[in-house]
Length: 167
Ligand code: SME
Image (cartoon, rainbow, N blue to C red; front, side, top):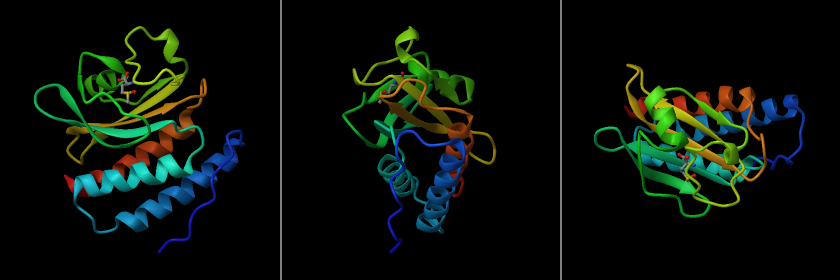
């Protein structure tokens, strides 16, 4: 059983945030070692991120289900919309472009889908396997404006890559 990681306060230095992400990543590597079930790894990633990272108001996966369509997967936070076509939302944009989307203020983004009125900023990371096939996205909403930066992108892409053995 891993010792619980300390919860990070909301306003920390970039150095502290990097060190905390490293701890979370190390814990997830250990927890998911040898696991090839997609849902089990997704549920573990969501649990650790949602309970260890400050300002993560909604943390969850959407999986590719059918042609250019996303279906909700494991998540934590208030209920999220169950289905998102690639043509809609920040999740759909991340899936269509196969690139990470960072939204500093969702209120200024006309195509943002608001599952909660408390959401102020968002990051969405595509799940790509070793053959660059898309399997879904990791969606994280924050109730803080401009909560996500290139540090979050770097580490969340590393964490999402822990799913590669599942595909
Ligand atoms: N905000 C997302 C939709 C998912 S709910 O936030 C959980 C989007 O615009 O795609």
